[in-house]
Image (cartoon, rainbow, N blue to C red; front, side):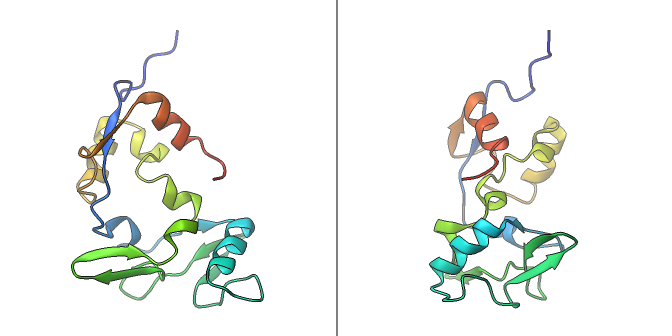
Amino acid sequence: MAKPKWYAAGLNFGCTQCGNCCSGEPGYVWITKEEIRRVAEYLEREDGWLAPEHLRKASFRYSLTERPNGDCVFLHRKNGKAMCSIYPVRPLQCRTWPFWTQNLHSPDSWNEAHTKCPGMNRGKHYDFVQIESIRKKKDW
């Protein structure tokens, strides 16, 4: 019998709009061709693609670009809040935060992520089934 996951009783999360999940150390925000199309449509781009200042190719995949300060190119800050300018069509990677496998590996992993994300351990309660559904999503 499989050992129950440490988060079997669920976890709490409520976005505080701090922007920490959208900034910081260099990294990748993976985006599929279908997501690129959705974002391009949202931005009313006639070519159905994103401009080079928004998108970069990394190996055989695509990633959103970052500003020199580490902010996602679509992150905008106003009045102490951070907002995503493509929020309704943001990539799956963004939609599933903080319920990423790496954050759910152990309580220590979760708590490490919590040091950068004040919305973790507060806000809405997600039960185990909801967490696993979010964690395992392949598309939105």
